[in-house]
Image 1 (cartoon, rainbow, N blue to C red):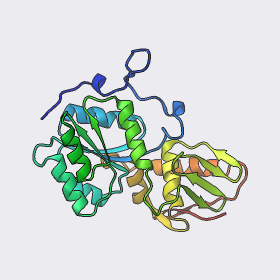
Image 2 (cartoon, rainbow, N blue to C red):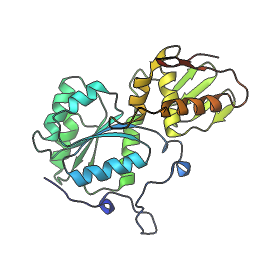
Image 3 (cartoon, one colour):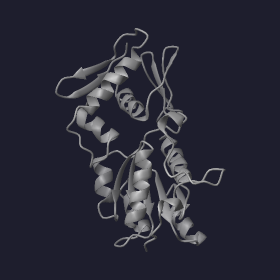
Length: 259
């Protein structure tokens, strides 16, 4: 079933009653709101899929979008996603069947189901099948993004909230970064770059792995934009004369060592 909605149906409305047609700029966001997520969106309604993808991308997230669930498992196997947005009313295989198959095969990706169904039994079936949250259409874009952030912040049972390497600390919940007593203000992509390095201290993270985390599959990765982010991150980490810990491994990628 298709729901031909324009952007006013999914973008949030402020207290003034005027609809905000674009997500707020990064400088206006709190650290939590600057959290970059890698999101897989499965929605068969083309216009709605484009609206959601564009809105989340403009908010700084990395979004891959599919029109049905046929290749959903392949995408989840090939990349690490923070969240899955899954429509229930898909044309070939309904969303519940897709989710049931994913959970049966061991996928634990946090999943938000979208539904136009009003029956509470459909919501219950979705949650019982393995969904983590749900949102009814039409919805406010701000609520969608907030629910996704909440899902992405839920840590696995073995994961700690704060990543530490040497004197560098990164709080995965608040998205705040410190080096010693100094707080460092990072953009969403800089934070995501640093987080990947902190999760694998002393190991070389390949360029392709970092690019896969920071950009969607359709982005042009032929430029030196990754190197630009690395230089900016180095400058911020050593702004007060601290030792350099972010190293380039020529031909491979980057490595973070304890200072």
